[in-house]
Image (cartoon, rainbow, N blue to C red; front, side, top):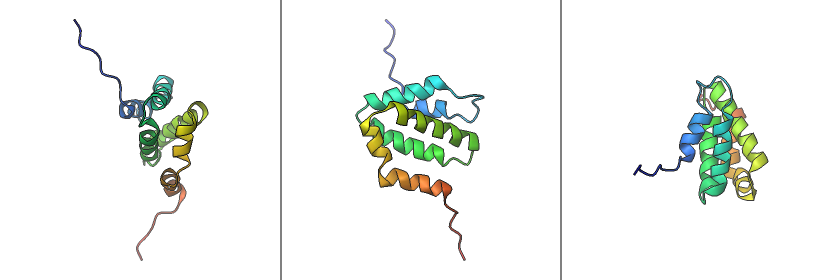
Amino acid sequence: MEPAMEPETLEARINRATNPLNKELNWASINGFCEQLNEDFEGPPLATRLLAHKIQSPQEWEAIQALTVLETCMKSCGKRFHDEVGKFRFLNELIKVVSPKWTLV
């Protein structure tokens, strides 16, 4: 008898979907991430934390892929995910991406 396979984590899916070594978008991982976050009770809050981190990546291709994941989830996920994206915590992380860095004088 083969051991039961453990379900894939959101972390593993986002890492594969935003891997800087990807030559093109990994739609299977992107869609799998969106589907899983809808199924998991803690999916939306965890997904927004993971996405915020990836969007802030200094590696441009990783950040662009993360924005594509966010866009896909906004189009295909429900109210619970939309509510998390609309929270100050997530929006503040996005503001950090477009705001100038703080400098010490």
